[in-house]
Length: 277
Image (cartoon, rainbow, N blue to C red; front, side, top):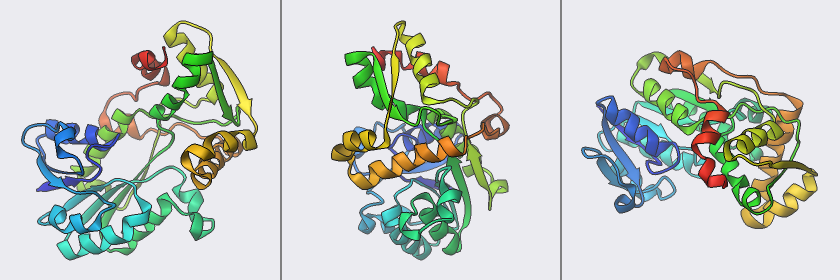
């Protein structure tokens, strides 16, 4: 059985390819840039992208199981192509906010839009719902390098940041077993942290003081919206607000499914210290 990994050169997908190859699985990797992918020997390459639906029929041909990277705008195209190709099972990289989104305006759905489309599409499914990626805080690197300062909203937002490698390891376990069909798997790192506590761990890793400065919501939007658009910036801001109102708690999925402890933020900061120096 060959597993199609979409987003195979993305932050999680590339690590997942290595996980599956190490486990002896047959992998077909969907990538828009095969030359740059540097994928392991033996991985079948499908040239394409979820956002280019015309490339999907060839990529899905003969595939039973798919790892689906999150791209909500094109999920309906994926569902149609996967149904036509006879895909049976889809493991979705969703996100912790999916359940919260489901209670709100459908126009604001992101992760839940993907989950709903896959479930309605008649596939066997598993939804992976990690919270904040540890790698997201690499966005603090420029201000840490320049000013030894991190500016962010909602200092009291409690998150449970997770390492990308842990997400990929859980995805590998789920893809290679049928026992997780129909499950929504909440995933997190091993500890609950506020942004100032994350900054403390970065400061420890680089050996110098780094200050945390709390922004107002409007200051955050004014800074970020020109770079990523107001809608995306507002979506991120809403996530911080939600975690301030409903603090996150660590989930046991990583150690339970992989048999090893989840990576701590302190370990991640030490491994990525050069990015902040």
